[in-house]
Length: 229
Length: 202
Image 1: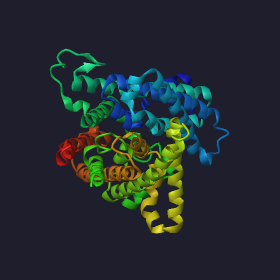
Image 2 (image 1 turned 45 degrees about the horizontal axis):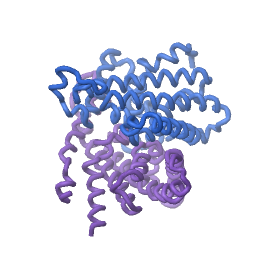
Image 3 (image 1 turned 120 degrees about the vertical axis):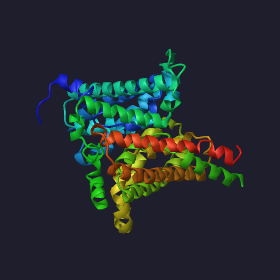
């Protein structure tokens, strides 16, 4: 593995390895929470806080945790931080807590966090893991912000609850509903495909290689695929 | 009679109206990842139903008799995810030892399900849903969610087999085309809006 500078560790999450558009991780919260800019940014920041903390702790413990039980250990660490963040949001931002609902608890099983623990924090130093957490968290928040902006302006005619002229009178309600989320996500990935000329996505085909669970299922789904064929 | 009517309402709304995959975006990863072939989609669907029922059967009593009794409600997330992870491992070991035939057909999907957000989602939702008041109702609700997942997987596997045969613009190949197809499948589920209210005159 070639050595990465701290700079590239921090910024690769924004575009080159954007967790949402390039690595295709954490699709569930991205789709569900991007109906309004406020809840999307709230979700992004909550996930980022959990990601930074869990990356730091997992990286600190990477020499102590035995390889065979590392996934359960990671999950416990992540779930603990999710609970902390959940309590903080519940106490100080009750409105956000209500709009995030069950998805807040589901940060635990967000593939971005477990995926980064497995791919990065379990192998790198504490400082780099924290930078990676910040970069990936920002990339996730940025992607959430982009998607929610498109969906809220087109679907509800508002931007962070502020009415937008013209769109206010021409709402396309479907964009804030479930199908709109999938549609916008598909179009945005195609758009990223166009600006990168397909270079980034090609190596991450949507199969086992791109799947964060690949490490823990030990190719289980691959054998399932083979069996199917 | 009212009790059974309640159960039917729960199961119908979980399968059709509040479909977890297409309406609530839970369990999207396996929905996109394992829906290429029909037989895989069915295998995954049944594994999810199985794990959801097991997980609900265990987490409901834990929440009610251990966590709530001792004022430990905030431990919900940690306890539930641990229980689900342990349960999946346990089920896999038991199936391997005693029912190898079933293990062969479901076993490969089991490890993937630990991090399926639909499973954790349904156990947490059962605790907060006002329609779900007793153990039987929570089991039925989980069954409905699982069946809804299976239905979505089977429908989408059919749609995908058609996409594979068609000509798609270069940049839309793969995931973008899949997502847009999923968007149309999700759109079709809007037809079920208000179904339960109208049938049962709520």
